[in-house]
Length: 346
Image (cartoon, rainbow, N blue to C red; front, side):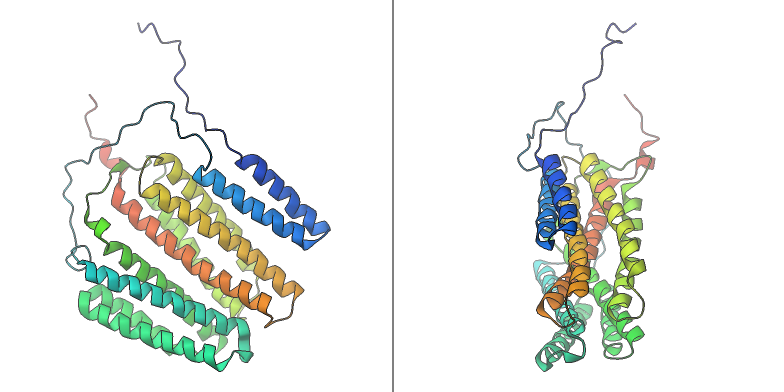
């Protein structure tokens, strides 16, 4: 009989943090401002964002752990690499980064055109066309470089260019495809990076609820939310469904990010990716609230409405891209928990 059977196991308690009182103060100020002055609500939103960053990143908290943790060694698993992306050199990675930045610039210009509506300046319209044509030429070069995956990207860019400047429904599809193209370019930039060729830092997936599956489901929800947002911006539908579904998507992102941070607390790649995804998604929610409030309080085509709506669109593209990066990294570094059932436990 084990003499220590009645002793409690060591517990891992969270380190002290100022995040809970900061979040509580921010929530109080936000609701107080709804009844008094909107500036107080803005201060409350900033306090909530700052407290969320404190809580997620653990700034100012103790980094000591109650029990030492050892890094898991990589199993003798053979890693198969595609000859097109994983074996790419540094020049292809730099080219993919330039393509992703160029696609993001085209999204910003397109958001400016949509925010200004029919009064959009000729310079902004021409800038959007130039950036779109340049992105198409860059994607053609990428297709000639890596063949199959590049040709799929080039086909999406050509289709997106053909859908521009038409009816509201077609224009909404144009904006939706632009977001998918940017997320695709970011994924290619990640898979062509030098770090992608290094040995993965293996760790086990969650047995009851797979993190890789949760990330894939969240990605599908974000894609639906992006499509709803494009339909709302081009006045194909109202904003009610988009706002309601945003709460579901935000909750899923927070749940996935928190699970990754908890399950992979010492991982040098997965935890930072999850933190960055939650920060971008939080900024997206606050910008959506700001854009909706600005449209209610100010007239269209004013600088406040243009800036908030443009920032909301571009941050939405970054949210989808950050989730793509996290999904790729989860598939790279996590071992399926099912594969461990037949392992012999010493």
